[in-house]
Length: 340
Image (cartoon, rainbow, N blue to C red):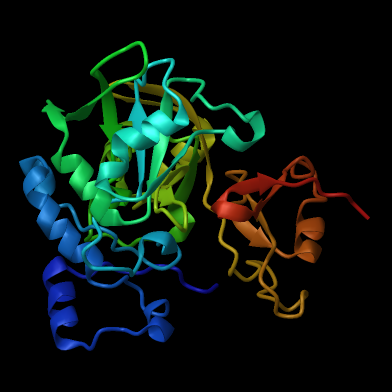
């Protein structure tokens, strides 16, 4: 079976490698096991803002390619934030133009909210919207102009009937997309889970702590982000260092994420790879193609080609197992399997 174990070097070794090696070009960047030095620089800059117990654990955006969200790799070294910013608690009578005028001094932007195009509404229906800036520097200017209240950011916005209402500004720091809890452990995609429905304010370090409190053995957590704006998509991945923790997590199927104002039940599935050979025939019965099916039943936890799936799951006790396949956005999906 092809090995998927990959070691994380120490942060010092990574820094020395970056200093001694030429900067990767676009052709070679995706073939290395690590992203560019942007993540490391960002991790060092943000370490001072982390609790002391986390300072030594934070290695931003360093993970094997199977687990790297390609959307947060590379790019401009000066970027620290997503260009998409959440603004909540808006006055109920504020319209799109008024929102735009309240924030356009920071730079060119578009105002958006969920289902805006379909609803054709001119007012954000739930009191929140997203500011889509053209330049990341605009986000940094916006943050610098905010009022700080504990760990939250606010600005004053006016509407025709409400003047100087404080609204919450919630930027996404790109370094919060990844958290390495233990970089001395092998990072195995076959001991990794997909977490669906992750609340968008939740950071990778918080997801790692929650899952570690439940199951133990967490060595890495990551938040999936969209390709263009690098904003959370509402899903994540968690890698475990041992099989026992991994099986406990996928057996639970659901977990309650509780952190601060967040309290949500989310779905847990195995993280399905799309470049694994069949664990039974090693490609001999499928022309050397990668296995399309993964069995998430704890008695299997293996990849199968169609032939080997039919042969192995026709046996008594396994006929009700359902195969998982990988679909868009890395989201595992259960598919029906029809017997011949």
